[in-house]
Length: 236
Image 1 (cartoon, rainbow, N blue to C red):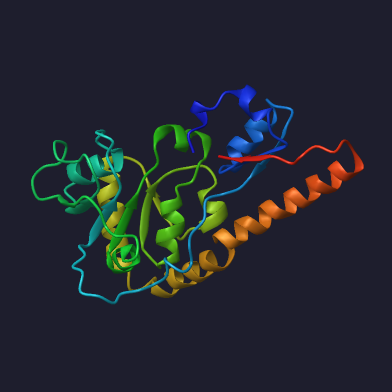
Image 2: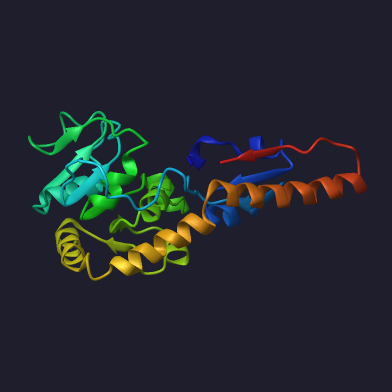
């Protein structure tokens, strides 16, 4: 998920490279001789599904993610736009005004409840990922839970999620978009659940393994017809 950290020469060591971005797979495919295939992020359908049980108190606007000591843009836009966003993650202490940070960690086994219960989940991408079209795995997890999601813009988003994930630009625009989503959350419940079912059916780890196996089997067949070289793959 960090394409800037991999040298082109490294790719050439493999028979096939899987990249979690259709945009970057096409770009990379024009730069290397090795076969490049897109293999998008996905979700664990056994962990992420609509679930509003439990007694967790979840606010209207939620952000889950570590800061890496950087004031992430969507959180900054939310705060400056007057949204009372509840933040969970590490290294936020010196960046957020008092009252925004709710904790450093949500156990993975109950994270679906937070996604399912919140009014709006905010999602963003690190800049290198956004530029290269690496769609966040959080979008797959949260969508699988039927969350109402507002995200920054990224190439390829509509191809997967249609118009069911709302995007924004600018801090003032974010507040307007979030408030509109909050007012429509109940009205779009069926649409959210339909997306959850779609993601949990077609964008799971099992589905990705099937994609990989088809490519590997094809490579094996080609190897059988040529030099007997072990098939190697690398996933980004």
